[in-house]
Amino acid sequence: MKQTQQMAQVTIVKTGADDLATVQQISRETFFETFAEANTEADMNKYLTENFSEAKMTAELNHPDSQFYIAWLGENPVGYMKLNAGQAQTELQDPTSLEIERIYVKSAFHGKKVGQLLYDKALKVARATQKSYLWLGVWEENLKAIRFYEKNGFVAFDKHIFKFGEDEQTDIMMKKQLSAADHLPDSFRIADGLI
Image (cartoon, rainbow, N blue to C red; front, side, top):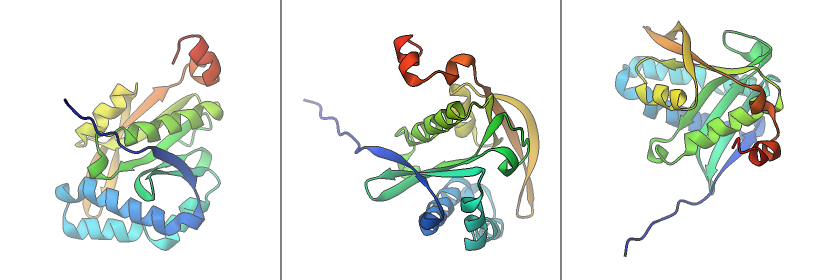
């Protein structure tokens, strides 16, 4: 008889400046796991030091147009997401859009739907704030992430350069247009068979 092991419940929790140390730790760990192999140690160390410093992370956590969410498995943070609206957006700054600046999950939890749970939360935030579309930038060599976003209805619309230490890398900019049905409350969507 085949036994299946169920993973404990992952919860997505909005976080703020009180959780600075946790956000820094999960940010550094997941970024390093995702990109260290493809970049020099010097570039990686410079990026981690500059972009996940206490001062920079505190400013991001306190920005009124940014939201952070941590994926928790019990007492352990296993992933996180940063969303930007309005002036916090890294490029477009379109008031009708919501940027997913970061979704990162610890490598041990890849394939366990943690990224999907974080993305689903982004979609709920976009619906609740009546945004017309979601957008993001993803490194052109991160094919796994590109497939994930395509599976969730994103399409490429542009490219931009991402400066990583001394290296210039190309990010593909992707967006997902939200339809009128995306803005209906879940109770209506379930009743109408939309979800």
